[in-house]
Image (tube, rainbow, N blue to C red; front, side):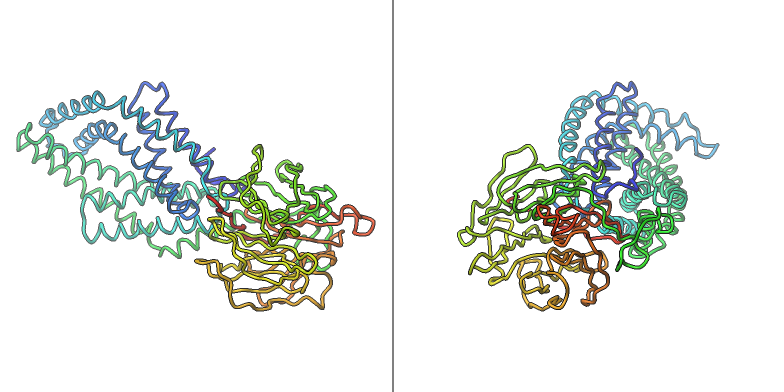
Length: 605
């Protein structure tokens, strides 16, 4: 597959695929039987440059620690190979320089320079070639293992845009520096960022092939021209320092003059191209690329979709017919959550302790775990699931592994169980419990180090949670009060303050249950005993109501490619004659509205 994103591929999956492909290519060239060792090393170094460009694009999604680790690895491996490659490149650089020189320049005058460069090349390979190759291969093999577990499962365009704009801005600044204070180092620094942008353009090329091809061609030329300039700088340094004493001074001066003349021509060409390529401000560049990406990735217009029935109360112009995609007749189907790394949806049947999974690609569903009642769960950063269970127990689960207990029980919740939960941007988890008898429910915060803090007491029935788009607010449902609250949320500490009633549904049909938010900042509330899903604007205005063939609509989440599918759980599968023909089934809707990926938890990591 080309070094580019796939239209139907999730962002995180694309990043992992691209990293794996380039590492495999680099290893293949270094371990292969290619008789031309120079070409093999050259191709391996090209893959390493692509990997550094990819890491810079994914920097926000990776996190700073992972970015620094991977970028340093690719850089160090490239440096280990550069000595071998540069020794060969210098010969080609000298030949090209002499071929472009004025006719009156005598080529044979520099024959001694060429002999010494050839001796230097042979020495470089004899001294360190095999040892360097072995060290590099080992480093790349470990990098390949790490790439398979890159923490990018929840990545979206927003993270890519941040990396893209940063690389564009660095290149723009480097061009300005080269113009104001010309030096070999300044032009070499510009070349690095221009090459990264060239690779980024290749990765995004499928979003608008014709335009990307034209821009990539000019970025390629900038990289090629600045690459020749850098090779001439290295040649100057080698001739001036390493070889200077073994050559006639007049020969050295004549060669340096040729280098200066050629670099002046190359830099003039590079600047002319660069001024055009970096004409936009970084934010404007990012906005334009975002619009192109969104146009490429959005679903086809409704007019091009197959005709189908529409539900009463649907959003105008949008298909809103719930489709049952899995049916285990759940007694209390709840907590649907998209696992971005696996590209599958998990949900629970609380009373039976069953954990279910649905794969949209194969349309297959199965029960993957059964045990004590599970009120909710989060996806951990390592891909495992953090289960919140009966008696306040918390455990980690991964398919094929034994259940790992994190907290065996909470004394105050021995007669209760957890209900809805949500991970916050920092990897903590807000987790609510059910009331029992005269014991009210609570809302806890589970910190990354495993400490539990009660953040709200005397809860009627702790339920649906969702973070605002600005990550400064948390919406929280108390089903018994039929109220959705909004709290001010402090990301640094996890504290909740300034309780406000966002929505009082006491005069509406059904009880508010599970909750999620879409990319427009609108809330989606499942209605237990209301047989519907409702959408609310950020100001609380009701925008739409979608009916289901089940009275107990329990929870909702977005998933699928770029979170464009809505998944809804229902309850009452053991009493369908009373609760409806779809009671207990998992439903999917395609509304043409994008959701917001849920955060991953990082408890105990």
